Image (tube, rainbow, N blue to C red; front, top):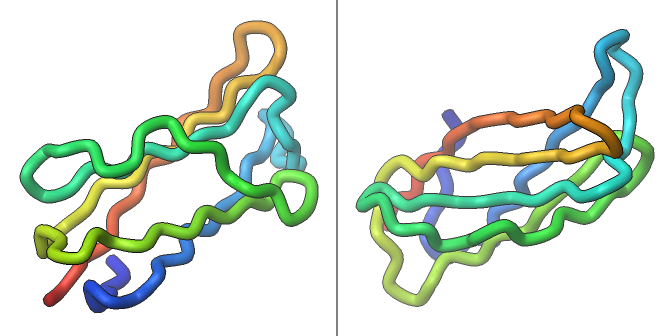
Length: 95
């Protein structure tokens, strides 16, 4: 798990691939939700930025006095039709 200081801007990066392992950009939406250690949603369904096909990033700047500890990150990509891609990860925020 990556560790960051509370004054840093955190860059969340990732990729989305289809069933065959090929990078894809979902046609409907790709959004990020971040939940702090207290269970409070601090980012709710915000759009990510795609740098290339299937490769995205999201910049998160913690609040002025953030809760320290383990944050949960969920990325949800929705494609046309019934396909949904969900990726979960975590990072640790220190004071």
